Amino acid sequence: MNKKIMSNEQYLKLVSDITPKTNEKRSLLSSFLVGGFICSIGQFIRYFFMLVFKMHGDELASATSVVLIFLGILLTGLGVYDRIGKRAGGGSIVPITGFANSVASPAMEFASEGFVYGLAAKMFVVAGPIIVYGVSASAIVGLIYYFFGL
Image (cartoon, rainbow, N blue to C red):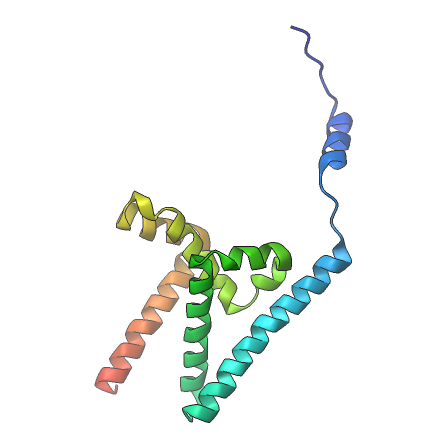
């Protein structure tokens, strides 16, 4: 067997040659536009709740966040959010929908391993326990506040 040993410089040149080139200006522009569009949708939802349901303050902020999280998870489940992420890059991960995507994606991927070891455990791996705990705790506190008026 005749093995050719490559130096670090040769290896780095090879990697540089085969790595796809990115157009940074186009990438930044698409990130800005998609992130801005997602935030504009959030603002539209906010205005909708203000005008139609006469919400304001914390109630308005919570309702808007819940709808955006739901949309992020729905689009992740339908496979749309991944396509948006490929085009938008960082623009799709900054808004609240990106966090919803980061929780839902691994949960869907490992759901076949069972509810506890697949779905619940993998959901904690990517997004971190703080996000999942924060959302769960706020939902429970919200329900207690709603039903018991504390």
